[in-house]
Figure 1: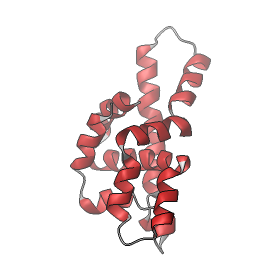
Figure 2 (figure 1 turned 180 degrees about the vertical axis):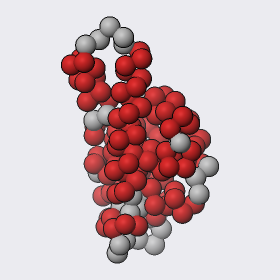
Figure 3 (figure 1 turned 180 degrees about the horizontal axis):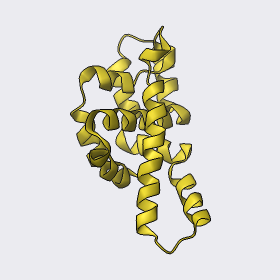
Amino acid sequence: MGDRLLSLAERLDEAVLRQVFTHSSLVVERSRSYERLEFLGDSVLSLCVTTELYRRFPGYAEGHLARLRAYVVSRATCAKVATRLGLGKMLRELVGRGRDEAEIAQLTANQNVLADLTEALIGALYVTFGYEAVRPAVVEAF
């Protein structure tokens, strides 16, 4: 699961991909970290999931749809998707070289960081390829 997200990620510009995996503790300027992409990716993820739930469950009331969405886009679910996609390993490979191994190990084991990586990747894919390319990839991964 998530093959489409990874396929799109392989087509990202190297500088953008590096930013997706750059935690704010690894840079002097926070704007060079993944935080802005994560901010955008959070909204894109929510829109993709909300649209899919709306289409897939026409008989569900708003409250039920909201609870489903909250579960699907939760930090825990995003971290599970990151683990399944190998985003922690990608962080280590892309920005971990020459850095303190303990710090990188701590980042790759942190559930919040893993969730952030998922959202940052979605944000970068959205900016690069647009909603229609990202939506099916997000639905598949989640």
